[in-house]
Amino acid sequence: MAKPATATHRTYPRSVGVPENNRQALIALLHSRLADSTDLRSQVKWAHWNLKGMHFLPRHQLFDSVASHLEEQTDMIAERIAALGGVAHGTVREAAAGSGLREADLAASDGASMLKFLAHNAAHHANAVHEAVRESDDLDDAITADRFTQLTRELDKDLWFLEAHLTTAQLTYRTARTSSGRSLVSVR
Image 1 (cartoon, rainbow, N blue to C red):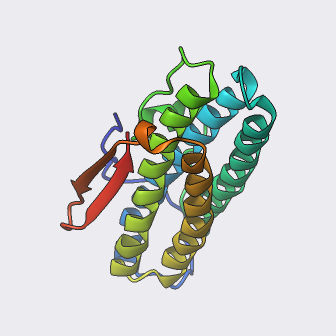
Image 2 (cartoon, helix red, strand yellow):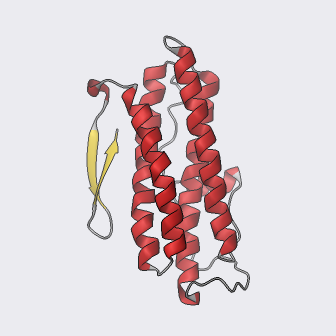
């Protein structure tokens, strides 16, 4: 479970074109997505390293591809925090403390079991990034909104690829409401 964002994040003076009173909220939003992205990447790499069974090679390659995309996304998020004058919370311990993702199923070894927890967590992360587009736009930061929009393109594609390896019977969808009343769908 994610810990609530602290009231104040360490920042440095910046001349970036974002209202000063919005920088703290933007940095907190970016930190939440950074924690989830870092956590998800570590879970995907764990699955990549420990996969066994049928369809090993294509799934092994898929997991590596998704992890590579998450590495780039994590870097983009952390660099946006720095561009706003913040200090990115990017260590493994910081990510674990701030992540809103479920723990990986560490008992899983077959591809179907791994795909199920990865698809769930990828859906959670992708939906949170979709919501972050709106939240950063509401905070008058079109650049951060654009960065999150860029991330959703690849996250949605990676989620599609993960879910495409599961049968319909293996997918369970859950609808939840965000604080703004928008619906989010996640895979369980």
